[in-house]
Amino acid sequence: MLPSTPGKVKIERAGTMSRQLHRCFASTGTMFLWALFLVAMTATYLSFHSFVDTSSRYFAASWGGLHWERQIRASASPRRPPGSAEGAGLSVLVTGAAGFVGTHCSLALRKRGDGVVGIDNFNKYYDPSLKKARRALLASHGVFVVEGDINDGRLLTKLFDVVPFTHVLHLAAQAGVRYAMENPASYVHSNIAGLVSLLEACKDADPQPAVVWASSSSVYGLNDAVPFSEAHRTDRPASLYAATKKAGEEITHTYNHIYGLSVTGLRFFTVYGPWGRPDMAYFSFTRNILQGKPITVYRGKDHVDLARDFTYIDDIVRGCLSSLDTAGRSTGTGGRKRGPAPYRIFNLGNTAPVTVPTLVSILERYLRVKAKKNVVEMPGNGDVPFTHANISLAREQLEYKPTTSLEMGLKKFVRWYLSYYGYNRGTHTFNNL
Image (cartoon, rainbow, N blue to C red; front, top):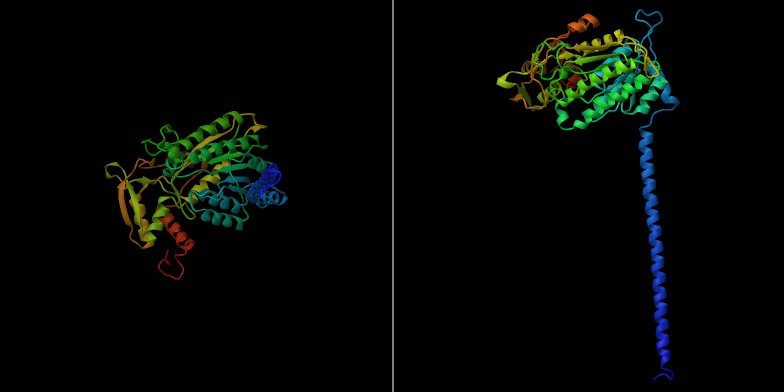
């Protein structure tokens, strides 16, 4: 039964093991190659997917091209009739054009025949659908709004290359006093970095435009001398928002001094009206009253009611347009100052402060609904107990004269609110407004 050559068994066994090892290594090598292939395919897919996604975002947010430039030029062209008493018309770049004040100013400029191009980043500080509705309103009146950020220097340079704007109305900003405690970086990004980016584009433009921009009554901060005058101190801000606006006044002064930019700063006092901002008290009060929700009414120290110098949007618009019309020319060329240029600051208010409880009672009367009020002490969130504008300088130099009382202005706002949000459909409750 045993083989005649016993060593043959060992040789055959060794050969068998060698073949098995060879097949094993061959199989392992094949698997390794397949693994490398799969890794390469996965990497290629992910890279392609990322490229497509990035490209889609780029083309969706891109600007430029012949059609885009034609839209810009058409929107920027003044349309005043030849020989008009007001002159040939302005060509104005409006930043924050889809915002509350920006929309109203753009419409007013277009209505009188000026050229207007808007720019807005449509951020989500409040419902972007309201901003898009404003943009549609502007488009229906021939105003083109570029979707872009004022921190995009290339975009601003392109706009000034396409159109020699005579004026810039800078209204883009991160608004709101209390929100600064939640997202402080957004205020630095928009109100400081964005302002510098815009001023850089303006000082390099040929010709240099005159700049009118929105500061804020918040710069008066802890000042307790009333009414607030442009001559009062503004070095004690009560909020980060106020601090960024005060910084803006110093920054614009620097560009005026070094580069010869004509600058006018406007300190707005609590602007309200149709198409307003949902974060403002009058707007949120209206919404909550109609929905049967409670409203929070803040009260100052010693149970003193808060008061604001509420200013209707139409009065603010007249002040903005008058500032544009009276702005002197910038004196720089090629980024160099050739002579002194105007630098101005004005209060734009109603000069008739009204307490917040009075505001609520007016809304209750127009809405015909009693508000559910929670009266609480004002928290330390940057708000101030009162504002009151001294407008004598604006009255003298801009012929600024507010004409709309809070009662009349709120009546117009409520009428718009009920129509815009559909409360008038199928009901006769508000027909007499």
